[in-house]
Image (cartoon, rainbow, N blue to C red; front, side, top):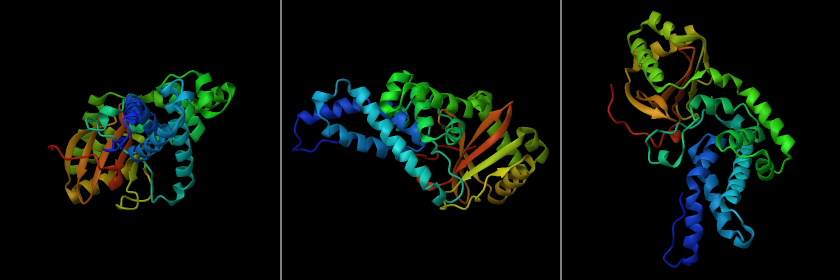
Length: 296
């Protein structure tokens, strides 16, 4: 939620809001990278704005640095709290897909924000994720990161090293939108006709289908692993429900919005020219920004 001005508000508050809004795009991108959902990121920014309005301006030399520190700390706290209650989430938890071109999209730089990357970052601890995001996405020096997180520079270097090691597999990801679109379209067409041979040719032998219904949509509680099981699942789903599919974009990459007995987005992680991961997000709370705009 963006700050709004009341009729009786002190005009000096306009300057406070304008300073905050000047950094909002950067701050929202940071919070989304750290938390993986726009809803949680917006909550963090709202709390950061409230703290900003109460801050003593005489003690704030650099608003951008001050707000970066506040948002990063709030996001890490929120991430810790969410991980503590993750066991209460029904089924697989996936990041919230951010629609390319949506009104929110212009506020966030989608570089290096693929669903595959966000999903992979879920294996990091909150401090590791914070250091990795601040260093890689925002290119902050370790000395500044240490000040933001109240850690030593050496500690931050070690956290970044561990995070980078955990994410080493990302170098194999294909980020070519045209390749993703071709594989998605071929996958859906083959699944609709039950072309098992064609499906198997598109899938990596270690393929995993991740399904997030959040307990609100029945997508299955566990990931579907292996080529044979993925083929069997999707041929049954596509042929039973005959869904309509709409080309869209998710986090800067190609994706589909699917309308069947329930609504979901589907995008891919591609490795060595084949589908290595399928991400289906059907939790309605994570799909509020999506609208159908023509199908094929």
